[in-house]
Each structure stands twice: as structure tokens, then as C-alpha cells.
Image 1 (cartoon, one colour):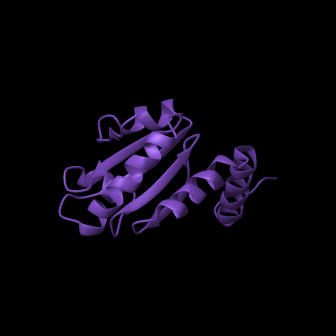
Image 2 (spheres, helix red, strand yellow; image 1 turned 90 degrees about the vertical axis):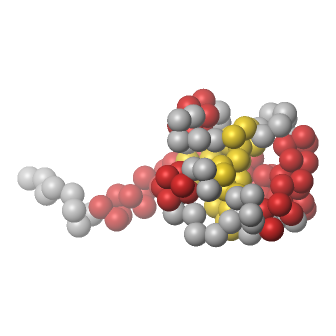
Length: 131
């Protein structure tokens, strides 16, 4: 399967309808982005069960801003609507495969529980008092 071009119009739908989405934030003028592209496309061929998407940061500046993309390429992995990985830089093939394997191995119930715990801890000072 080839990569899917993400836009602000289809982003939510693609991410919410798929349990595992890899997103490459890139731009055509970016040398490291062009170097990473064949590595990313190769991984897409090897993992047809996953969605490999691309966001052109020039054409989709709102999406890039929403995710606070500071440098490109940036790879993000979203599992079950939770961003579980985000890192700038062109990853070598072996590292990309390792990251995909680690993301596949995550227990998403555990991930959601830790997010909930972190949100609760952060919100303790702001929550209305009971009693």
C-alpha cells in the first residue's frame, strides 16, 4: 500500500478510522525529507496492515502548527487515537523498523491508563473540591 496524503480535511477521519497510523511530516524543499522518503515507502510496502501517511508541512501549515512540528522530517505514530511516538529526524531503515515493532508491542490499555494518571496528577490543583 502506498502512502496516504493527509490534509486538515481528512486527518481526523484517517486517524480515527485506523488503529495504527504512521505520519511523516515533510516538505519538498527538505533534503533529509527526500532522503527519508524511500525508507518510509519501503516500510509501507513491508507493513501493508498499517497506514502510512504524509503531511506536506508547506501545504498543511495548520496541521504542522497543531502538532507543534518544529523540524522536519518528523515521524509520528498514532495508535488508537493516541500519539505514542514523535521524533524529528530522518530515521535509518533499521531504526524505523525497531520503532514500528515497539509501537506494535504497546499495551494500549496500559498507555491510556498512564495518560489518565498523568492528566489526573496535572489536574489536581484545578479540580473542584468535593465535600
